[in-house]
Image (tube, rainbow, N blue to C red; front, side, top):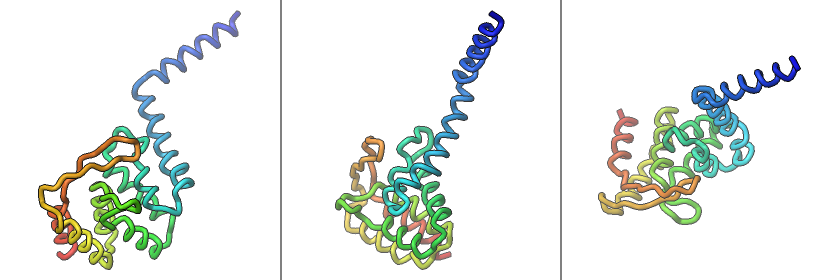
Length: 171
């Protein structure tokens, strides 16, 4: 009888701990770290486009820009080959994806952010090429992109943002 009481008390304590929002948030962070660092890397380690695109799939708290920036940092840390990382970043700086659709602004902005903060000034022509691609469209252009988790996101012409980022690099 004493053993059953101890088991019931342990079950109640475990239930209280797991139902607490703070511990639930902790376990979510641990799972996100495991997902981003482990499973996502195993699934997409040879394709940075899919790796970055799917980086926000299970993250409900952070904006996709933050998830994509983290994914690029993680990709670079795991790859340890600057030439491969540069070629993958050039793929992400292209205006359209493999299917011919205009990419989500978050991918462009996260890639530009990563290029600038890792001091890859030799990729500046590719950033300017991206800016030129946005030049051909009206400044008030809006378009929808589908995120990895299925939501539709409204995007805008980001030529002005790219100009600001280029000015930072040129200083």
